[in-house]
Amino acid sequence: MKDITPEINQLPCEPGVYFFYDYTDRLVYVGKSINIRSRVKQHFSGKDRKSLKIQQTVKRIDHEVMGSELIALLYESELIKTHQPLYNRAQRRSIYQYGLYLTDVNGYKALRIAKTEPEKEEITSFSSVREAKEVLHRITEKYGLCQKINGLYKTSSYCFGFHIKVCNGACMAQEPAELYNARVDAFLNKSSFEKFTRLFEVAGRTGDEKGLVYIENGVYKGFGFCPADTPQKRLLSFISARQDNRDVRRILMRYLVNS
Picture 1 (cartoon, rainbow, N blue to C red):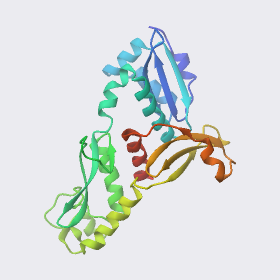
Picture 2: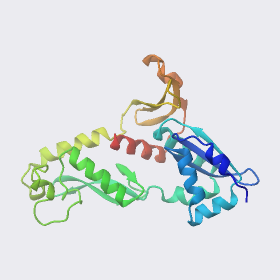
Picture 3: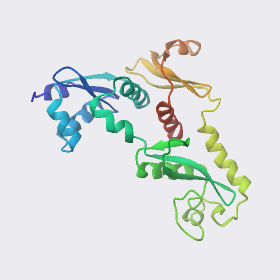
Picture 4: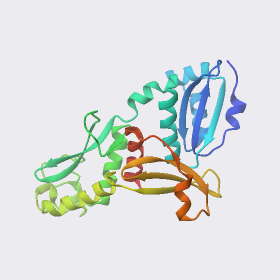
């Protein structure tokens, strides 16, 4: 087994994607991280089954700095679909196991966490229940929603939020449903891709450039990089066309919900 510690130590501590190649120079894994060197070190010090296979198989490491976690995520998803590396197979099946769905609780619009279902379109998705609850707690607090209605606090009476005066009593039908639902709609409107057009400006790969991600009428168009001083009217010319699919919409939706 080749000692690739020198290669790892030369990797940048920046956001991007990394590539593992085996002894036949076949791409066997694609990953992303906000700190490439730190994440690759974890692969080569881990004791889980996948880490041990990587340690035994990988001969060469490559990388691309992306500047931001958002573009790294989008690029990683695209590369996995294109190359289907051996050690990414399980990741493709299980990366987003839970979703946030809209339902009804006694006339109030409820945001509930559930296992993702292929036939149902979720508002956004998560890789774990813990992550899902953390995000839903933030949404509930930000929009003044009810923990009980959103399934975060089990009680037959008022939710905890009511006692600390961040819930207006929807948990016991004291707030008119139309007022409560208007705040849920405000969240949904912000998080909806329908007729949604936006150019996101994120960190670039260097200090003198910025990253760009473009959505037009709810369709992901691609990403790119441009000089930091590029006039606004020229930004779209730097977008490289990329394929829209459900996975990239999930990534973008998560970014919208968390921003």
